[in-house]
Length: 114
Image 1 (cartoon, one colour):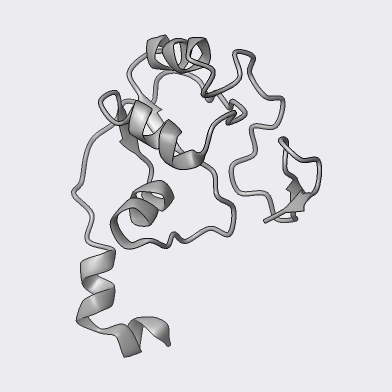
Image 2 (spheres, helix red, strand yellow; image 1 turned 135 degrees about the vertical axis):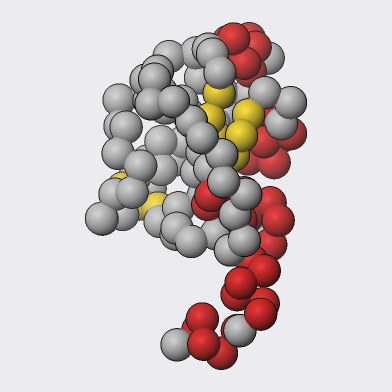
């Protein structure tokens, strides 16, 4: 319904430039220790942001309810730099489920989040 009503706006919002990524590497999750915007700015030169994060940057709203920063990186060096700067945790977070069906606790506050 929303797609039909939005028409050209919807198509402009979801226009995607196709890129080919090799399925190599591993999924890493880290706790943000700084505001999302600060982490995104620090990752900018090194990352290709996943669709939800890219939509938030371009249009102020994403598809998912959670406020995670999702990005593709060519290596671990940017994560090490951000951890050394105190922007993200230096240890991997145990939860690697990207799209949890239920609200899960915010790792910073311990309160339910979504």
